[in-house]
Image 1 (cartoon, helix red, strand yellow):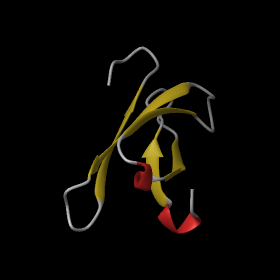
Image 2 (cartoon, one colour):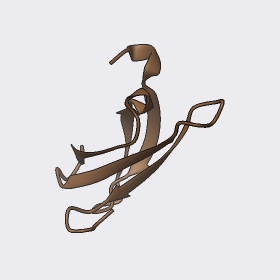
Image 3 (cartoon, one colour):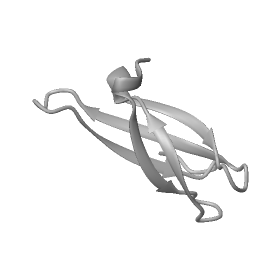
Image 4 (tube, rainbow, N blue to C red):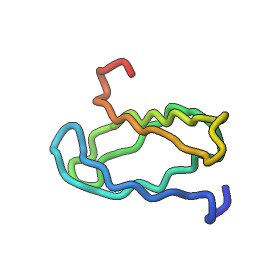
Length: 70
């Protein structure tokens, strides 16, 4: 992982609604990972969908609770 490929995103916890920053690495392609909320410590699903065919690499981000299917 290279620092220049990291993309910061401001998100909100799906449990406690607290805002926090995530550093994402879309250069690794589409992925599903987990991140703990920095406030309530709940496990958050993080799904990154990368459009690899776009000239400008773009990605979408979806957050979900532990019991949701993303």
